[in-house]
Image (cartoon, rainbow over all chains, first blue to last red; front, side):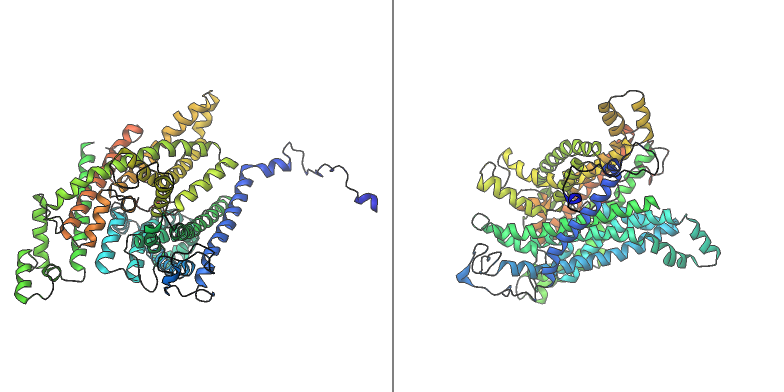
Length: 308
Length: 330
């Protein structure tokens, strides 16, 4: 028994080819398609981890043992990170930065998620109508898409927020309206391809109305790809919201959101680097995470579609 | 050709008209009485009526709109409240700064992003491409105001190489350009890589290779010429977006351009100035888009503007957004 356990020179890999081939398993492992699959997996997982590292603490902000985000302590102004139990340090008014970032993140995330739900709904409904019915429906919706894409976007967003006040519903709606063209355009092109498939003709022959065919058969088949883009839009929505609040057009209640925290900390950048750096890294981590996740999932879907 | 140009011009005018109408309606829909805001505290009813008459606010909404359009045709966009000068002049004064920034940013982007994208396409599925990919994802995930402040701190405060703000010297151009370019390079290089890797596996490329064309020739003469239209479209769209004022970056670096002007106009509710800014930037955007469309046949002789209908004239409208932030305005 012992002899079999002694480590000897590594035995050659047991190659038992079912058919003679010059392509070794090692070659297969190195092949581009395999690598791509591994990277898609790696991206998905890394993305999921980055996203969760940000999302979980933000969601649980109320439950974590953190100081109140609005309690000022003028005796403890601009403490460096890791002093007196302030993990991220304190800001110019002695408020705990980590607590502010997490509580503000709740608003940022909520706006982002609501915005992509609204823009996803508008985009999928209008996009699929345009793609499926064509004709004047398509003409109207496509014109609308083009017109909106040639508008100065951030300018319009700022305008609306400045005029109607920086409340959460206004900002959510504004971001959603800014984003629906992405989803609309993609859904339209997906539906255009989908409607030529035989099952659509079959459903029509069976006597389903056009709307029923669209809603019950076509849309469910394009939904997966469309929702992936919506996921990527979440990253964009978070960035837009932070840009708005950096420019002073973000929600103030209940808590200042990320862009505002950074803009407040900007004045102290020479002495207190953490006020800007840490909240920014928090945004970057979330957005990188969501982007990687969306990218990885899309690579997988694409491959699955190719094999199908 | 002429018909096509006329048709596109008509479309452009329609877009401009819609934009201005939207802004006009938004301004009037917004809660708050501009007359009360203008009059100051405790105005009498007579005061308010006088101010309304002075600015034509007592007219019906349709009447106001008519006056607005009539003045617009004469090139009169009103007087800026806060500058006490013709609104159009105020905007045009700021425009050169935004133009300088936008041109320098798009040049840097093109010079870096196109070779980078080609390089990524040539090393597709390798560790190098994967690394470059991670880099571009990081690049497009940074909020531009944050990366701006970071660059500012590093290269103007910690290592005082460049001036921190304004446009006193050409050195002041470096950091804002870099801030914009990081994001744009990430977006454009990914797009170039996607286009090129499709082209590089096309049959015409295999044929060219079998005829003994060098790899360099394959990449640039066969691959790149066929990607030229989408790449140019993407660069042009980005450039047009920058002309709207790279609002955030201008604010971070106190750049005296249109973007920081907009923020100020919004803060002071300077309606004529807002309308003038929207008009000027929309005209520029539409003009750039028109020029791109007209450049297609020069880049690709297969495109003939006369034969296609106005709508499908662009064989490759901006490629569908693949990753978040592609649609974020610069």
